[in-house]
Image (cartoon, rainbow, N blue to C red; front, side):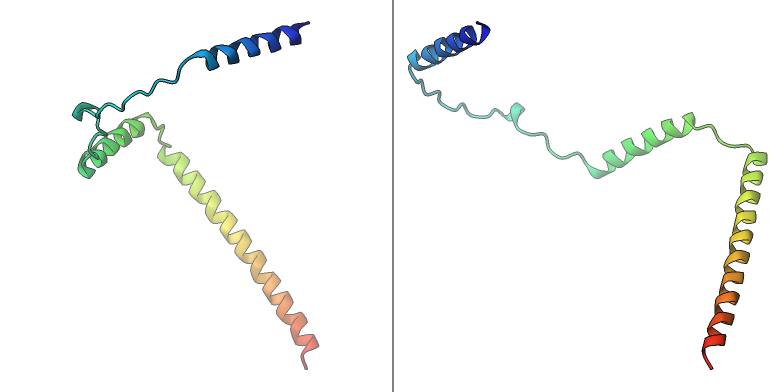
Amino acid sequence: MARREAKAKKKKGKAKQQAKPAVKVAARPVKKAEAPAAPARWYRVCAQFLREVKVELKKVTWPTFKDTKASTLVVLLVLVICATFLGFVDLGLSWVMKLFMW
């Protein structure tokens, strides 16, 4: 029942659209105020960007020296472990290659 009512409304809507006469609307000239704005000067854009950066940097919670030192030590330790591991892998593979190469 609802489908029939929806179809009937569509038909009425189409009939109303067809009944209206087509009226051409003349294009009105674009006023100067409506013209697209000139591109902003690059230095204004850069200055605005730097102001926003300053505001955002004030919100940052910076790590303490102790935290920075601890993180640096962890990175260096992992670096030494990875370098040692890769060194041993390289030595092992070179030894294996020497066995097969006469």
